[in-house]
Length: 162
Image 1 (cartoon, one colour):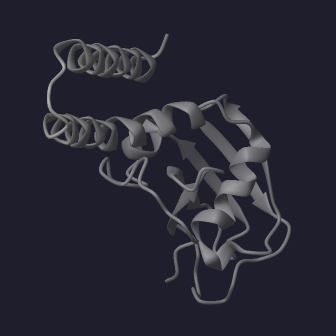
Image 2 (tube, rainbow, N blue to C red):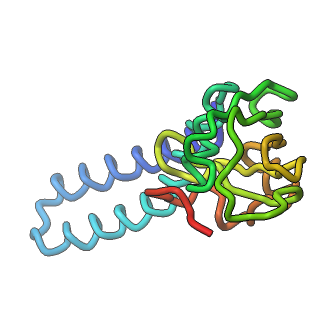
């Protein structure tokens, strides 16, 4: 069981216990909204981590889809990725070169975004033409300095530009 699963289970148990206590005590409805707001605030902290936890089990095709989802310049490039270390590191080659916004892609770093539209990692270009990339998922992307720790798990509704 993952740490996020344990946290979510504990939060659910606490909410259930609190709701039961409210009903048993017959408290006024005014106390309920305050507790509900507190529960929502707790969920706002826990859910991004849980969403990231769910997205951790990824395959090469997931990583390939996450590249253009993270960066508009990679749209239409048709990445093909292979596993280097499952759920951690992937080597990706683009069928087509990225948009010509960058004259030398080598060393350029771009985020990856999973199917739930959350930043799940990042990639670094290994070639000047931008067609070869090394991608890291989860904390490994932070370790590789592809993204900051505060960016991992952030909601990203559309690909980044520039």
